[in-house]
Structure formats: C-alpha cells, structure tokens
Length: 294
Length: 177
Image (tube, rainbow over all chains, first blue to last red; front, side, top):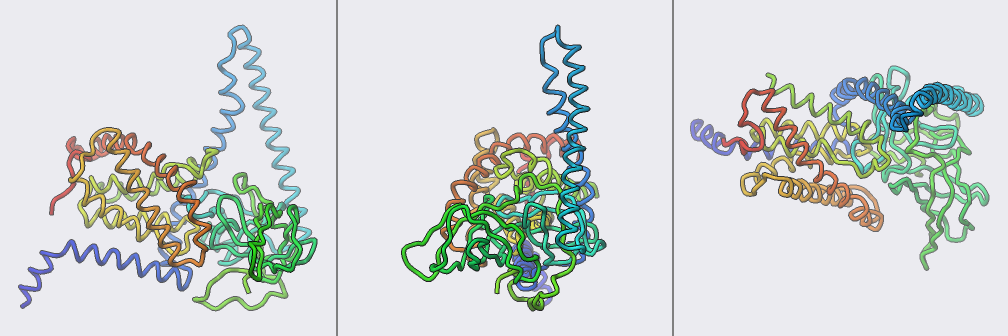
C-alpha cells in the first residue's frame, strides 16, 4: 500500500507541487485579505534587504539625471565655443547645485513650518522607491518601525494628503497613495462643507463618493480632510474638483478630483505619528481598513 | 548553489530597477515589467518545481513593494511560469517577433487575470477599471513585449557565462522530468 502510495506520488509529484504552490498563493491572498498582512517576519526581512539598495539606486539615478541635465547635454556644441561652454557647464553645474540646495532649503523650510503648524508628532521621510506594478499606487519610504512608523499612519506633505502606511519593516515602509483603488479618506468640500469619501481612481485621479445629490459642488471646489477618519488631521488639502457628475438619478452625485500633491514629483513626506486626540478606536482586525470610511 | 542563489538576487535587482530606474522615466506607468520577463525566462531555464518556487518568490516580492493588498502576483506569477513551461515547446520562440508575441500575449493574459481578481475581491465598480485595459494594459504589455527579446538575449548570454553551459537557456527548451 505504502509502495503504491509512493509510486503515485512520484508519478503525480509535479501535479501535487503545482496544486500546493497555487494553494500557498491562495492562502497568502486570503491572509492578506483578512488581516491585511502577509508573513510579517519574511515581509520585513525582504523589505530590509531591498530598501538599502533602493535608496542607493535612487541616489545614483538622481545624481546621473542631474549630471545629464546640467552637463552632458551641453557637450555637443560648436568646437569654437567648447572652452566657454565648458565654463558655462561648470558654472551651471555649480548653479544647479546651488539651485538644488536652495530648493531643498525652501522645501525643508516649508516642511518645518508645516510640521510646526500641524502636529509636533511627525517624522520626515524620503521616498526611496515607487510601486513596481502599474496597477497599484504606492511608494516606499526610508522610515520604518524603528522610527515609530506603524500600519495605518497618515502620510502627508505641505501640499496635501499623500496616503497611509500599508506595510512596515524596521527601516522602511510602504505608503498606499490616495490615488490607489484601495484608498479612501473621509473628506469635506471646503466651500459647502459637504461630506464625502475620497477614493482612489488610479492615473493620478481620485473621486468623491457618497456625496449627497442635494449638496452643491462645483468645478474648482477645494476638498479637505474632515478629520473624522482619525488618522488625518482636519483641514488638510486633498485636491480640487475637476468634474461633477449627477448621473441622472440616485441619492448621490459623483465628482472627479485632482489631488493637490504631484505624486510623480514626490521626494519628501511626513508621517503623522500619533492619531488625533478625537480619533475613534481603530477598526478591528479582519475588517476593511479603509481609513476615514465610516 | 550558484544556480539557486543567483536567480533570487537577479529578481531583487530587477525589482529595485523597476521601482527606481524605470519609475524615473516620464512614462513610468508604461514601463516594461522586468520581473515578468524574468519569470518567463525562468520557464526556459529551470525545472517546474524550482522554477515554480522562484516565480512564487518573484510574485511575493512584487506584492511586497506594491500597493496591492491582496497578493495577486504571488498567485499570478507561478501561473504565468507554469503556463510558459507548458507552451514553451509548443511554439517556435526564436527571433524577435515570436518572443515579442509570447511576452505580449502572456502579459495581456496576466493583466486580465489580475483585472478579474481585482473585480472579484475588491469593491471597485467595473466601469472604473475597463478603460485601464486599453490605456494601460495593452501599452504596458506592448512595452514588455518589446523589451523581451533584448532581455532574453542578455539572460541567455548571462546564464551561458555564469553556468558555463553554452546550450543552457532558451534553446535548451527546459527540463523534462
């Protein structure tokens, strides 16, 4: 009997392996769906291994891009002007560096002002990687659990809301952007105080959902966080209404939103470390973690 | 040992390139999926069991660094690998056109699978996702297809050099248990 079992296993081992592999993937999917996490230790280990390389790669790419923009493109000029061009290139490089420093200075000053104004319990982080898949919207930042970053924490910038922490490792974390389909933020239209949920729509766009049809909303209206979700402070800019659609019938109207943050240019962000004092208790494990959704 | 460790390292390298270098281009949404091409190539280089585990790992890596909360790629990448294993000897795969088509078709099929999983598991209205099939999936698969012959060539050269087996690679047509 045992010999027969062994024979069958040998004969069908490939088939058994395929089933096991796909089952493992399905179990993982189910784990992620239920608890919003995979195998924590393994996840953290892999993220820790990859993030220093991501950081180094980002630095190299930025340096190379800077060099190309400021120097290499200037090389192919007329011969008689080469010396002068070289001088110009050197000066431009210097100028570029100073400009970069000035911009960084301005950015950091803005960040400091923003931090002082909004919440003292924020930690600044640098974006070190983008989402490897084009279906989803996330970025990797260089701050993790060791810096106090936890799942669900809000991530913002002086120009507005960015998203929330989705996965963490000791020294890095993944941020789910507000433009991702999984994202939802409780918000209000600044002018009319109409409540709605801002959901991601991909392609650097969001949509306003559950916005009552009776509420007056117009193109150009600014949408800010309501503070009701617990993670985002009240009054942070989310975006601007670009299109309003009443869809003929129904209780709700829909609006398309352009986020105030340019996600393609994202370099530095802030993680809000403490939930606001008025925060409701966190949602139970296993329930959908759509922050701000009530 | 080299044959075990190297593919994992190459996978990590491609992930880093995908999240940093390829994302730095202005058309970063329409970038070739290096890990996908590598997963396809694994089907030619490795036996189903080890290759399957590698493909699983590649999918897991992709899920880990993406905003994908369900782990779709951990499921789809082994499937892509197994399908590529199944079809690799049934199609002529030498030359630019065939390799391009192979990757393009597999890219579109994986996209449709992810699309279906997203629709099944996430409460997203269908209307929001359908345009993506044309604005994103087809161009993305096209770029992935374009990059495939070049990367297959590089993988082939690389694997021949590293494993000192000139016949290894796409021409070997995989492993027969």
